[in-house]
Image (cartoon, rainbow, N blue to C red; front, side):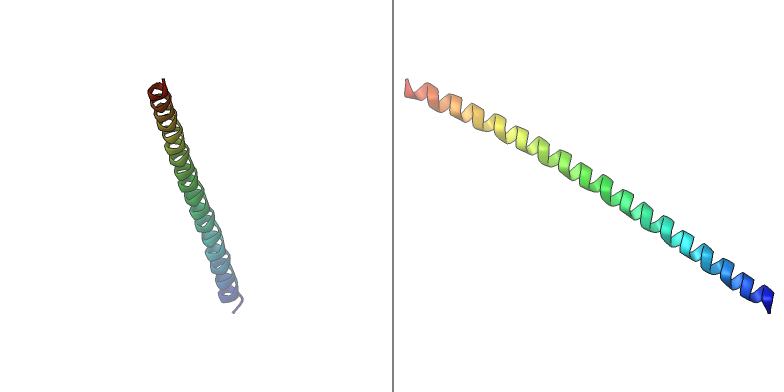
Length: 64
């Protein structure tokens, strides 16, 4: 009986450890994805600022 309880306890510990690792892995994946999204958003913002600067320059050149 003791061996069965020990086996069940070990299996539970193993399952909990696997769940912890899987959770950590998913968190890391989500973090990498969020960083990529943030970098893409920053690039889009920089391109928009550059386009706005070009438009302002063209508008100012028409004023003269």
